Length: 252
Image (cartoon, rainbow, N blue to C red):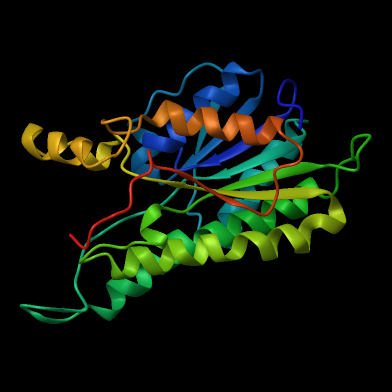
């Protein structure tokens, strides 16, 4: 899929994986529309080629407004990347009792329903565009996690949500094949994002040592580079790619 001269929609674009992905796509010549919550957009300074817009990915109307903005600007949306997500920790049964049901619901709503919502509405917009010579109109890249396969203690909600994202991949690719839209998922391991900013140097070193090779945390730019590779590679479809340095998570 061509990146230069097209438009891309990236969720969770105010920081972390989303910010790095938005910047990488813009550097490749895409007009990027980044989506994040109002509080994230308000404090962020996007790079050249990236427009940040406030929207809740779990709601239909705000996402449709973003897509309408892209269409009004005359941009051809060809790439959708879902990076928005949350990862609170809680055990099924902890010292204060059973897992809070509303917390479980919230994690699934943001990580799974939010991804599905943006994918379905983004696909609707892409499907209206002309196809290239191979019948392709665009690509959707979703973000799961290795926790989808080896969730640790306290990750029950997060693991369930990310397993759902991985589980949607082949079905989504089959559903959207009729309109020439590919669907891929990346399952990153431990990435140096703002979510890890508060951990100690000792804990960061322990996390790095646990990665078979290379012995370090992944960088958001590496995730972004994989996104651009997926967009470039037209035969990648319906698959979840682990980006984890061969890490397999221990129970805790």
